[in-house]
Amino acid sequence: MILSGGPRSVLDSDSPTIDPSLLASGKPVLGICYGQQLIAHLMGGQVERSDKREYGKQVLHPAPNALLTGEPGQVWMSHGDSVRRLPPGFELAASTETCHVAAMQSPSQKLFGVQFHPEVTHTSNGREILRRFLIEQANFSRDWTARNFIDESIESIREQVGEGRVLCGVSGGVDSSVAAALIARAIGDRLLCVFVDHGLMRKYEADAVIEMFQRYVPATFVHYDASEQFFSALAGVSDPENKRKIIGAEFVRVFESHANELQGCDYLAQGTLYPDVVESGSQTAATIKTHHNVGGLPEWMRLQLVEPLRLLFKDEVRAVGRELGLPPEMIDREPFPGPGLAVRIVGEVTKERVKMVQDSDYIFREELFRAGLVSLPPFGSRASIGEQNSNVEPIWQSYAALLDVRSVGVMGDERTYAHPIVLRAVASEDAMTAHAVAIPFDVLERAATRIVNEVDGVNRVFYDLTSKPPATIELE
Ligand code: XMP
Image (cartoon, rainbow, N blue to C red; front, side, top):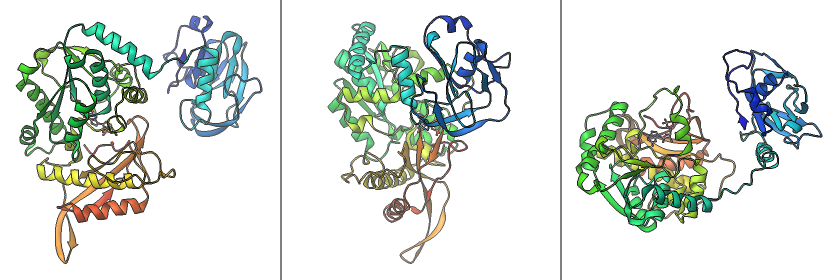
């Protein structure tokens, strides 16, 4: 068991707790931050209240007999309260300058605690600490492999679906592609993949999706080009939430208009991942944006769900995709929002504006690729990758967007009155928080020069420096 961190104080009577008998069961338990304090509190130690938080890096000095913490190294602290007196039977496992009980252990009871966060990258041997707990103390055998997962999934998909047919809405995104490829392995052409092109994809992306599915996913594949329908529904609309709702509703309409072809399906495949499962259990999240994915289906279809990836994290999904033989263009893609470029165009979405964003985005991505900052070129580009630049953080997501204002410029002695493009490149772990990546200035400058020269209707380029929060990754 791992007892995780949390913002509360164990000294408050209504804070989260566990049945103390769990700690006496002999099962290995690791308490992290709040978890360590909870163990100390329940086992007869003393936790000291503090209103001041300690936040940041510290150097860890492990005790010679420490079982988990091993080598001295940097650790990441983020706590208010701390353990003042060890519970009976426990020994000190590590300290830092500012925190005496930075780690504690009771090997005979298999109970361990750390005040810092081994799960974040700023803790230099955090992975090793977790490995020692899971392998040496909890005796896990570490036999999860993408291969085993695929074999087991194929069996359980066959069992669930029987002779039925499965419908899978695909967008070209990693999750739906890997889910489709996995289900196709299990039931072949009884899987119907439907790709609805809303006309809001990146440049050449729709063609690339069609080609990749035909090549790599042995299922029945249909493609509905519904771009005209989406553009007319979006005409004159500039409110972000309205745009999102209209796009969601149009997806449903496209499926409805093809009801005859889809009626033979009994199941609906979705690329739901474990973080989605966890998040949907949380009642505290406010609606910042109405998210939707390609699976927006009419109510009457009432299909049963097939969700083969629901226990996986994103990196495991990618490993499964790789093992299934999918190419990097399918599995190493950046996340792309369901409503597509509509959320990267502030104001009304028109064909001309989509083209401006597509062309600018193509150039930006090509320059990032040439500079070795992203691993994939834009669809259709023959550029070669530059030498990797390890001074720049890995990019989680990068794009060009269009603002709904105009400004004055001069080009070839002519006055221009045209739109600005915003470039954005962020680093993130999970899209919940993000910050702008320090793209080398020469790369930004090359992209900006090319965009203004090559894209009609654009006369300025900005780089978005805002982090999330307070901004979001997408503009809308
Ligand atoms: P924000 O803009 O909220 O985005 O910081 C967080 C992540 O979610 C993606 N995103 C979406 N993905 N449907 C999706 O499937 C959506 O409606 C949607 N809106 C935003 C965004 O690209 C980023 O990765």
